[in-house]
Image (cartoon, rainbow over all chains, first blue to last red; front, top):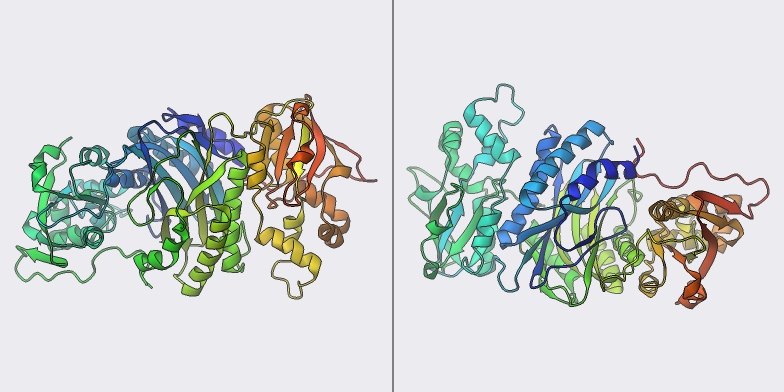
Length: 318
Length: 318
C-alpha cells in the first residue's frame, strides 16, 4: 500500500465531520480554511516520541487516543474551543494492523473532542507522532500563564499523580486490579479539560495544563507572572487508587508526576467561589494562594516531609 | 541548559520580525494569531527524518535552511503568501553547537521567506524535524491539483534533476568542482518559488511542487484532475551542471528525481504566454500538454530511450 492508499483508507475518515470553515482538507499541498468571524486562532504543536513520551509497547489504539487528548489539552489550557488538527506521523514500517489501530484511537478522540484532521504527512523512520492542534477564541479572552496576582487562589481540576503512578504498572502482567486499571486509564486516556478551559475565559487570571508535574507547571505560571505561591499540601487532590497503590509516595507523585493533563489555574477573589466550575463530576480543589514573594512555600506538610528536589519532568536538561 | 533556556536562546530570535496579526508567540501553551481580514488560512505539515530525507552528516546550518525552504514550497504550490511557521524538533542530545547552527540556518531562511516561528516543541529522540507552515490567500484564489483541463500547457520553473544528482556527491571528498557545488546547492538550499506561486493565482489551472520527481508529482495533478499528459522530452529543462555530471542519466533524473522544489503547473491558452511568469532569471519551460486520455505519453525521446519504470520517490510502498 503506498502513501496515497494509506491516506484514503486511514486518514480521510479522520476528517469527518469537517470543521467549520473548511475549504479543502487532506490531499493537496495545503489544507485551506476560512476562520470563523470574530475568532482568533490558537495553536500548538506537540511531539510524542516512542520510549520518551510513551512505552514502546503501548497499544496503537491507546496511543492514537492519547496523542489527540494530549494535544487538545493545550487548547484547554488557553480556553480555546477545538477547531482542527494536522498530523505528522513517522513510523518504521507501514504495518496495516498498527495503522488501523492508531487511526481508530485517533478517530475516537478526534470526534469526541471536535478536532477533525485537516492535513498531515506520513514518513518512514523511528516512531514519532506530531500533532498541530488549532482552536478558536474571541480576541482578548484566551488564558495565559502571565496574569496571576498576589491573593489569587491556586486551583486544580480532578486529581494529580495518577498517570505518574501508571508508569509503574503499564504492561505489567497481573495489572488488572481495579486501582491499577484506574491509574493506567489516566495515562492511556487522559481527558483534556476543554469545557473547564472555556469556562475560565475572562475569569481565571492564569492557566496551564499539568503535563510535566504540578510544581514544574505551576512554576511556569509563577515565572511568567513574576509571583510566588504557598501550597497547602493537605489540599492536594489525590485519588483513592493512587493512595492505595503509592502509599506515602502519593504526595510526591501529586506534586511532581506529569501526564495527568488537569488544569492548574489562578482565580481572583472577585470571580466568586471556584466551586461554580465543577462539571461532569470533576472536582475543583483550592490548593494554595499566590503571594508576591517569589518561590514556593508549603503549608501542612506531613510529619518528616521534605520538599522534593526534583520539581517534575525536565524536557531537555543538558 | 534546560528546555526553557534553549527556547530563550535559540527559538525566540526566530520569531523576529513577527508576522501580521501575532497576538502571542513562543512561550505559552498556545500561540495566538488574528488572521488578516479577507484572507483564508493555508497550511501544511512536513516531517524530515534523518537518513530518509537528508544525509545524517548534513551540516546543521544547511539542514535548518533546507527544512524551512521545503516547507515553504508547499505554500508556493498553493499560491499562498507566507505567514508563519511552528517547529517541532526531536533530537538525540541537546548539542549546543548543533542547535546554534540549526537555528542559524532556520533563521536565515525564515527571514528570507517571511516565515517567523510562532511556536514549537523540543523533544528528545531520533533526529526528526517537523514544520507546520501557514500562509494566506484570498478566498477562491488558491491553486490546487485538480483543475487541469485538456489543451492546457504543462509548465515547470527552473531546472529538474539537480538535487537528485546531488545525492551522489554530498559529503564526497573532493566534491568542490563547480558542477558538483552547483547541484549540491540545489539540494541543500532549495528555493521555494513563492513569488511564482502567487503570480499563478487565478491563472494556472493546477499546480504542485516537484518534491518526489516530475512524473510522480505531475501524476498527482493528472489523478486529481482526471486527465492525462503528453510530455516533450526534448523540452525538459536540465541544467548544464547536471548534464556534465550525469551524462545520459540526466533525462531520467529530470523525470524522476525529487527535491528540486520547482513548480509544475498547467496553464490554459486564455492566460497568454507563460513567459510572462519569468522573474529573477528563473526560466519557465513548456514541457507538454494536458490530454483527455489518462496516462502519460512521451514525445521526442532520445534514440533507444525507454520510459522509466520507477516513477519517482515513493513515500511508503509496502
